[in-house]
Image 1 (cartoon, rainbow, N blue to C red):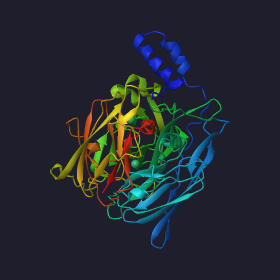
Image 2 (cartoon, protein in one colour; image 1 turned 60 degrees about the horizontal axis):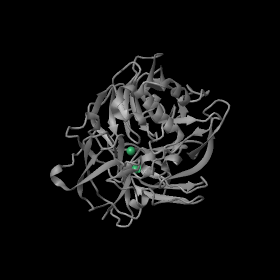
Image 3 (cartoon, rainbow, N blue to C red; image 1 turned 60 degrees about the vertical axis):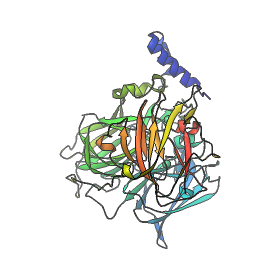
Image 4 (cartoon, rainbow, N blue to C red; image 1 turned 45 degrees about the horizontal axis):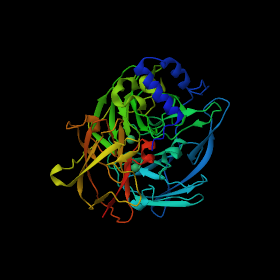
Amino acid sequence: MLKFSRRNILKATAGAGVLLGGGYAALKVLTRPPALDVANSRPLPIPELLTGTDIDGRKVYDLTMQRGSTVFVSGTTAATFGYNGNILGPSLLMHKGDDVIINVTNQLGEPTTTHWHGVHLPANMDGGPYQVIENGATWKAQFTILNEAATYFYHPHLLHKTAEQFYHGLAGLFIVKDRLNEPGLPDHYGVDDIPLVIQDKSFNADGSLAYNDSSVGFKGDYILVNGAATPTFLAPAQFVRFRVVNASNARIYNFGFSDNRKFHQIATDGGLLEKPVPLTRLLLAPAERAEILVDFSGQENEQVRLVSFSDEIRDLNVFWARDALDKKTFDVLTINVKTATADATTSMPGSLAIINRLKESEVSKTRKLSLEVSLFGSMTINGQSIDMNRIDQTIKLNDIEIWEISNPSPMVHPFHIHDIQFQILSRSGQPPPDNERGWKDTVLVEQDETVRVIAQFSDFADPDIPYMYHCHILEHEDDGMMGQFVVV
Ligand code: C2O
Ligand code: CU
Ligand code: CU
């Protein structure tokens, strides 16, 4: 079912205008976002850090999903959703090996769920479409942290409703640390260990959030970091770790710095890399996370901007799925460097972690998944839309499998698998770049590309409750580009 909204018809027409070379300027005027007084350059908000309350040997956390309001456009308020607040949610600090309980109370006035993205846990604790929390109810999620130290996140996952609830503000970080492997990285939360939850939003003239669920994927006109439009961060003049999270519904970013400085990626979605990987650009698709180290030593009083060089990735998407920001380099965060802290991290560790490579020789099964957009615009996997009554894959507990994900569609798709972390074996026959040679739960699959990933499905079997796999462009997921597997 093609769900072209008026907005996207305009976009598509504008694209056609480029091709035809005529009428484009007039259409562009029509599609230009309204000139709004969006309050930017405010100090970067840092989400509260919840360390949990010790109760009978467990760490207990409480989250309430609620309605609130947020000021984006000066003099107006927008209705938003948040966990324990008006928008987004606290960062939950967990340690590997901890037994945790998270009580999630739903006060949204509508059903929802809360999914622990990237976390390896029993299917009935996953928080996907099967663990619905009715309005007024509390869901008690209880599990042991088995994941590697990295940055995970949580968000709603109700069937066909994920995109809208997420867009209105429901997302928070889930930070795992490992007491047995702390390789000397900056770890003072909010000081030199900084979460950057990056999203794009649009606003109506009255300052409210603008949204439409067109299956192309919603992209906003303004960039928010931790809920504030293009804010400013005061960085100490030393090594700073940024936990960069693409929490946008559909936008892909090509991050870098305004002075083209080198930085180092130290972690992927599900763990530290073996050693820091030098980069000047970081491509990050929805739901992907990357921890990076940036050296501000000796740069007191200097300013640098975190930007997205989106115009450098021209061919990533078909023209009608690209918007104005995709054709530009645009600002994300302004960084003003101030005095270093007393206990600054002044060097970068040479090695970070040991990653045990899963062996192709031990693979029990290879599955093929094709991410497709049908002639009529439906988002499918192997030609089928999600059906909760159909189990798409049955996997034997402890098996190592290869999933071959191909993309014959005219758009790019960030593909995500619940329960496990995988390793990328190849992209269309080529080895992955160094910064993808770590644990991943989401991988961007470009047009005409085939990505092979390998994973082991260990620890948790449940013949009755499936886990999901899907495209993390949330409108694609909601439109049906999702399947389910059980581990038995
Ligand atoms: Cu971010 Cu199915 O999840
Ligand atoms: Cu997930
Ligand atoms: Cu997709």
